[in-house]
Amino acid sequence: MVAYCRPARIAVAIAVLAVAATLGADRVFAQTADQLFDDRTLQEVRLFLHSRDLEALRAHYDANMYYPVDVVWNGVRVTTAGVRVRGLASRNAAKPSLLLDFDRYIRGQTFLGLTELALDNLVTDPSGIREAVSMALFNRMGQPAPRESFTRLYINDVYHGAYALVEAVNLNFLARVGFGADGYLFEKVYAGQFHGEYLRSLASYAALFDARAREYESDSILFGPIRELFEEANEKVDGVWRDHVSTYLDVEQFMTHVAVETFLSEEDGVLGFAGMANFYLYRPAGGPHRLIAWDKDSTFERIDSSIFLRANENEVFRRALSLEALRAQYLGALEQSARSAALGGWLEGEIVRLAAVVSAAVHDDPVKPYSNDQHDAAVAFLIQFARQRPAFVLGEVAAARAAR
Image 1 (tube, rainbow, N blue to C red):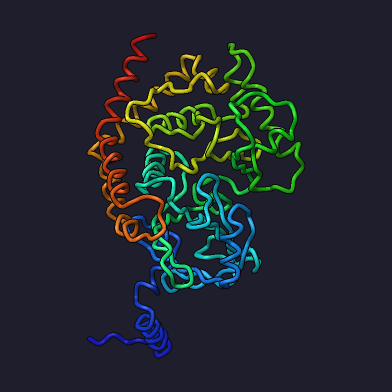
Image 2: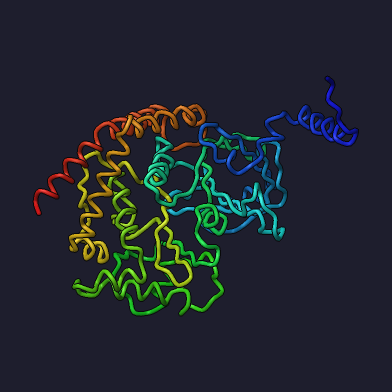
């Protein structure tokens, strides 16, 4: 029996096949953000900008100046987006970290539904994969974290090295992880060391937390609840401390977030060496703040770092840890992180898998600030970490429980 097709449908099918033949079938059917962030595949992203603008971007790498750029990936081209240098310690002229802002010059323009995309230059991490592995563990632990994949980056058709493609934490991200689009979002930025102490002025918190949603509202609406969070958290711990702080902070989620960072031996996070760093705060309308992981290239510092490293330096965490139930929450999340990482060799498997995706691009990278041998040694250390860290953490958790 011969199936009957209407002529219009036949015409559409022929047109689709013709496009597929021209661009390649994968380029027709694989043009989604999920494909862009597929960390099983080494992507290829090409940027095109005027040579004069590229020269200026390099010369002013320490400024947040935008320049027009065309972006091409997998047959998709976005014209006249904005590009600027991003980052703090990772800023340099030779291989700058970049932020792509797709509607900077054309209102409403998106790329695969994204309004922004971060390109991490991987210069502070010789392995190239610490952040991606860390974000995978945050996700595995049920914590909100950006998606990440790897790419060969070409600028004006010249290979510019291996980069990570990092999902921006913005309204698109909030919608994807199930957070309300009507909430408030803040990036923790560095404005001097801050260990969770109470600061009286709204301006002090405005300097520490950069509003990334509803930013045109008044300072009292934006930063008042943040000030109240730290005011309550700095009170003497008593029978109502947890209830009062929980009005402004999801304390259980806070303890779990810090536990994941601690398992990963994070040097520059909530309990960082220079104070609280590298996270976003999300506040739903009328609800408590939650933490979102960000910038995890300072993880995997030491296999034997203590589970209480710098615990007494943070005013919020120190007080929370003094309450038996929250201490149990923290130790339980540490134990879960360790067991989850070790289960079936998951953490080691992620390290080996991601290194296999990106290592060739790193080896070919002409501007990376480390050698191929240093890259290979850094990956080998991560594998050693994956094999030894879970047992070390479980031992410390057991000792901490026994000591009570």
